[in-house]
Image 1: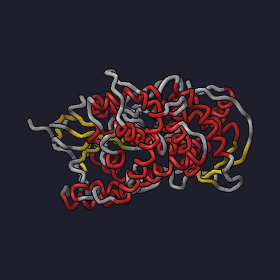
Image 2: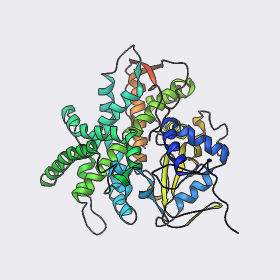
Image 3: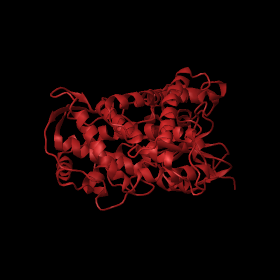
Image 4: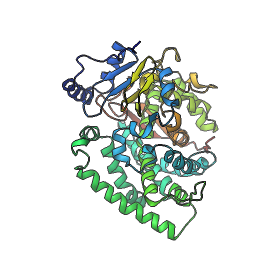
Length: 445
């Protein structure tokens, strides 16, 4: 028997694909959610310029996708527009076995005891940022979090503390990030076959500036190794199983990946964290108590629940290398599978009252491996997940020990509409801030 055809919005045509792509640019994720709600957890979507696209909103099918062999579903091909920003040399877009080789080299600086070494810098950056925040007037937590987490990631990556040097090194990365989250990126990617990426002058200019800075720092560090040189120096010193070092181009590409992936998503999560806690006073009291005691179990549960409800990057993808059986359907080669993380994270079978903020779901319990996937899954799972958790705990505890926050609005924020790669609060998570000093050290566990 022939497998059933994939459900799809009608009419399914090239013209409709162009209209759908334009509508998605305005409506964003809610447009896809409507199709999923109406047609089921697997839907073929006509998106002009992206080839065949299949959206998936089911935890069991997500498991199938994440556990498929890497030569069957391609992770690098599946990330789409992100590859244009990170570059073809990035570990993020590499396929196997190169992806695994690079991942092994990047893992040690981002896990285990290495995380504790970053805590003093994260605390210092948080205090420095808080000293500049306005008191008594509404502040957009999202913008404040972006500035703070950008300083953190530049300091940790390059091993620098001087504010002027942080600005010098970070400025072109900030410009690249602005391009990454702009609507221009998916548009140009959809036009890649007619020169949409080759003619992108602003991207080329930013990459030239990054080359000048990063290759210059790499050359200086190779000539004059020094302790405390941040993750960049660790990458320069890293050796593979065969003793081979990473090339300058590989280091440059992975540095871009770590800076961009470790900044905007963390900043957005921090803004959502503050907004959710300010509207759930009991949870806020428990996190404040842990900020004083140095414990972190409930704080980590709050972060996990925030990531469940508001995953900063709401989609991830794979590309079929050949014919692929997904559930009851057979997908053609070159089909882009898009996993809707924000829908899967709200699976009612895994989470009773899935739209409610209930951090206790994660107290003493590990998240469901395929119904809680804010960091993706499988061999392409976000390599910086542990670092992100450490940074969020450290920043949040420092903020709550040394500051006081109040919501501007009695209502929770909702995500901004439109097609953006990051799910941000519509109004930037407006808060009132004031200073309050009660210091206690933080240790990542």
